[in-house]
Every structure is written in C-alpha cells, then in structure tokens.
Length: 513
Ligand code: MSP
Image (tube, rainbow, N blue to C red; front, top):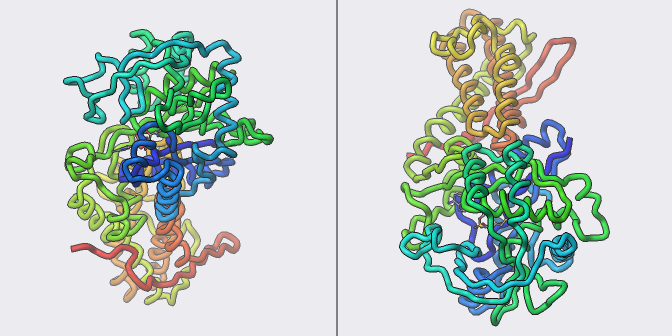
C-alpha cells in the first residue's frame, strides 16, 4: 500500500519551537511505522515562505525576503536532521522551479472551473493568521490567537467560490470520506458549514513587497498565501512539472497532520480547492492540540517559548521524542514543563527502560558470557499479579514470547494503525513492566546459584522481550531502538534461538538529579 503523510509547511519567520517539533515528531512516527509495515511511504514537510508576515519579518531584520527565508529554511533543516525526522522531501514555497509550477497549475484549474471572480475586498486581515477575519471572530477587537488588532484593508482582489462547495464539503465530512480526527473537530467544521460559507479572497496586492507567486493572469497580484501554501502538498509530488508520476502514485494524501489553529484552512478551503481542480480530497486530517508551557500558550511576550534544542542538549533526541510521543495527548492540549520532563525521564527512561536493558545485558554477560539459547516455549511462565491479570485476562501461565505475540503486538499494531501513539507507547511500557516483574519474581541473580539452566531460560525471555521492545520503539525512538538492536544478535536454527548479547558501555539514559 502507499502512504502519503504531510506536516503543515512551517512559516519561515522564526526558529521552530516545541509546538512545531510536536507536529514533526507525530508525522515522523507514523511515517516510520508505515515504512516498517512495508507501505510505500512518502513523508513531506517544508517551509511556508511567502506572505506579508514573512516579508515584514525580513524587513525588520533589514534583509531581502529571499535571503531571510533561505536562512530560516536552513535552520529548519538542521533541526529536522537533529531530530532524526525521516522526511522524504522538503518543499519551499519560494522555490520557483519545484513549487511554483504546481501552484500555478492549481490556480489555472480553479479558473477553468469558473471558480475565480473579481471583487473588492474590504474588511479585516490578521497578518498573524494570514487570514481575512470577521468582527464576530474577535475578542475585544483582537484576534485571539495572535493578540493582534487586525488591519482594515480595501483592495481589488480575486475571489474563490468557496460557497459553491458547501454541500459537497458537508457530505465529505459527514460520510467520513474526508475523515477528521478527533470527531469533535469534524463537528466544529460542520457547524461552520451550517452557518454558511462565504467566498474567500484568494489574491493579494502586495503593497511595496511583491512577495508571493504572481498570478498567471495578472502579475500585479500574488496568490493568497494560504492557496500558495496548500498547493505545496501537491507541488512536492511534482504536480505541474514534467513528471507527475508521484502525484498519480501518492495523491490523495493518507494523513495530513496539523494543529487545531489551522484546521479551517485544511478542512474547508483545501478540499474545496481540490474539488474545483478535480482532485480528490485528503483521506484524513489528524488534528492535534497545542503544547502549552506552564499552562499557557507559548509566546515571546510571556517568555515561555520552549526550545527543542535545549531539551535535546540536556536529555538527548530520543528523550524528547519519548515525551512528545507518550506524555502529550494527540488530540488535547498538553503541558510541558521542565519538572514534568525530568520526572518522566527519570521514571520511564533512566529507571524503566534504561535500567531493564542494563540489568538484563549485565546478567547475560556475567552468567552466560553473552550467549543464551532456548526454545521460546521453554521460557518459564509470567507470574503476574491480579492487577495485570485483569489486563491480559486468560493469558495467565503463559510466557513472555506468548504474551508478546498474542497480546502485546496485536494491540500495539491496532493502536498505531489508528494513530493512537501515546496508547501504543503505553503498551510498550506495559511490556517493560512485565519484564521488570519477571526479574522480581524469578530473581535470576539468586537462581543462578541453584539452577543455571532455568536461569538461562529466564534471561532468554528477558532478552527476547528487549529485542521486541527495540522493534516496537523504532518509530518513536529510532536511536534507542538501534542501540538495543546492536547489542542483541539473533540466530535461529530448527526452532532453537540463540541470542548473542554485548554489554552497554554507558547507560542508555543517565539519571538526572
Ligand atoms: N504555514 C502555516 C501552515 C501552512 S500548511 C499549508 C502554519 N505554520 S506554523 O509554522 O505557524 O505552524 C505549523 C504547525 O505547527 C501547525 O500545525 C501548528 O498548529 C503547529 N503549532 C504551532 N504552535 C503550536 C503549539 N504550541 N503546539 C502544537 N502545535 C502548534 O500554520
């Protein structure tokens, strides 16, 4: 199967903060997961480089817009590398060769459908949102998202007949053909459609700085930045170029990840543009909440903007990926504080996973010189308590390989296929809990003195578990998964499995005081 996944393209006006990192990590986890299950995967991210917001930010720094965005796009790509984001390509909207032909092709398709007409826009514009806003959406005269008073503008613009697509949009969302996750977000969009969708201004006169894709029919105007940006999901596949193989292969997108602030553009404008251009809408919009810092939205004024680099430096890449994958709900807002980060890091990475890996490998080396052989069925049973039993039900008496194959893995895969990343992580940690409990109940460090053969089978079970954990963690924590797998080699001969293990030279996760 093919799997096309996108993140929004990020505004190239500032460095990426923790919120953007969150979007990226979620998309990366799903992209990596789909590759591991054999899907032909294409993962897109990029930068949104046009529009007034960017032009002004460049001006403020005394730079031309192109030089300015080049610098930002470079910073973005450095962070992507650092975070081990496995994107297949990076699209930039100022790229005249790769992006503009697609944006122009989409525009022409809208014109050909008779959906573009001339009008005069007079009303309000929030540069923060890069959106036309109405009085009704303001609180105390300000945009709530950007705490900014929108500007009054009156200009001759081209309009897109969004209203024409209301009924079809409603049908797509209601039928789930355009799935919006979580459903509550879909209902919000249906309510907006119910209030009536007005046509939208889709071009801008760019005052002094003509910074955007010029309209093919009127180069004195540029394409409205959201139309330009949304078209990048297609231009990145080669739409409008000489080679549209990837468009045919990958479109429609399987999952488009985005934050709740930009849902309207993705759930209403985007599918309407696609319908007008006779293209299919994306299959699913996965809408996540905001990362808040100390209970508040990150903002320069509050001084609570979280920088991913700071966490990477102190805790490492996978620790940050762990936090974003497990400790933040994919649909609600999630708070990130330094204290909470340290607490979960110590409990679940330094103690939980890290400790289990080092204890197990140490025993394997010390007692068996790193070579452990058994048949899976000869591994002693789990001795679980009542609380665990209520989870695994009638699996009492079964051993680690059995529980992994029949309970842990099926649940893990079902959850990841449903994009339930934190819950899939919980399943991995449930297994870590079983393995910890296994050590406590069999006490291999004592058992070795009386029954080396049984001890070997106990350690075999643990090593088997670790190997599976590494497989399961690969999408979320690729470096840690790689390190664990490097330490464990598997050889199978006629149903008998031999693990050769090496010891850790340093703990996977150092405890933080
Ligand atoms: N350029 C537009 C998207 C165009 S897509 C055709 C844009 N860029 S952005 O840089 O402002 O935001 C990119 C993504 O980061 C969005 O999904 C947004 O929701 C997300 N986040 C920005 N701040 C966030 C948090 N504090 N928390 C979580 N994600 C948030 O919008």
